[in-house]
Image (cartoon, rainbow over all chains, first blue to last red; front, side):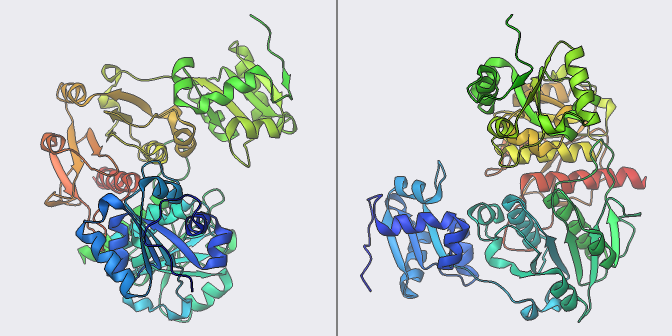
Length: 270
Length: 270
């Protein structure tokens, strides 16, 4: 293996070029790697046991104790820590005001069968979710409500896209993330306890009415189409939020959060 | 005035070029115009009394009754309806799968003093909000909970940006939108009834504890910094949502929605 430089200042550096391509899904899949930015998120990743394969940090942040911890952890695990410039961090992240650190992590996934559903009272299930910001925001909300993780059903946006990871604010590393087709998910769901709760425009129950049973699986549909009929039919409960205005639906991440906090609040009250 | 063509197929058409520039804030401000896409959003705008100055529609959608209604309304109001191609709609909107209609609207704003605070039980106040998706999503949630409108305090992102209008799903046209500096807002707020409720990491009250008084002004801070100390000090109530995970905050649009639904739910129960 050719030793990598410890300091990179040239845009033409092959590693810079390679890391930059990880903003595309195809390259992420080919390499099994993804990007996460920011000292706070990388520190949270570290605490959750995820050590990046590479960490890039701005020269002017080299003295920060958390940066030093990161560098130490990466080198200890056989990865590479690379001091670089803000310009190169900008090029890697695509952001105008890049964070001072950027990590390259190995992608991971949880098998449905490896999920211990009893470990949390709330699980979130998203079907054909298309917006990476929504996906990341749902992970962030899941962390807040003490959910166990996010199960992505059918063709969802890549949870390891830069936008999704950014919106998750670190929850990418703390929430379990599983992917499954619908029949596989239903088979797994029905192999144990669990209440599947869908939000639907056609529901007759207000979301405050039911007493939710743990583990509650909150099912959220595609941003434009909502849930397919057959998926709604599989739900143990279909509920709706009051909509007092002209619109007939909420943003997917908002609907998930309103629903998840109601489930959490019921548990807090009892 | 040079009559505009009723059908445009050339990318080089001056009107196409001009409308395309409205994706930039500078040009929106110079022209006092903004873009909104989609038959559903334009129909909602029409119902709310907002008729576009220009409407572009795809040739293959010309027969749709709602498109015909739009064209009729625009021409009746002295505006221009322009039949065009999907390619040009793509160029105008910047979206890969453009909507079949796109409207160019005059910007509007509500003066703080023109707001009738008694007309709604909930108002949302955002301070230095930076993300256009969050801003649009907050408008959409405001519509759903029956809020009167959104008051943008200090330097918020432009509510007429393409991304904000898209995320609002039409609420741009149904919610009042006012802009003010903080001292001006506080002066206006204190000139009448109203409870200012901020969400804060430093709050000691759980958000389910207080009985909220109408009109409730829900104050949400900047995505990265939260609310400045002096702004928190001005609040009648500071509350927090439970955060069970590693993260210490929610996405701004999510926090606003969780808070707004609690206020609405209290009103529904009483």
